[in-house]
Image (cartoon, rainbow, N blue to C red; front, side, top):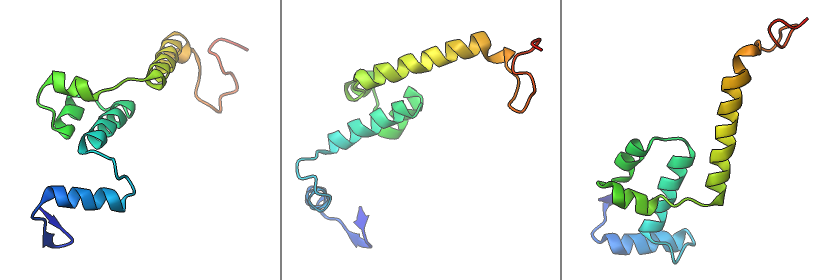
Length: 106
């Protein structure tokens, strides 16, 4: 592994230096991995793709890092409601700029 063109001989030393420079003295590599998994899930990246990106080989290990909080549940509910509304009413609405917003209305 190299940093700024020089070989990093000890990853623990490099990690310690990096977290001190970032003002995250208590950060663990697993904290960053968990944050990355959560951010990928919130961004809508599929679980299999997220597992490949994060390097999780088993579903059980991936699930350990995939922490869900109240915000995630709220976002899922809003997304579900939106898709449900779109299925019910979405086809009836015309594109913006139309004089009539709903088909058949005058």
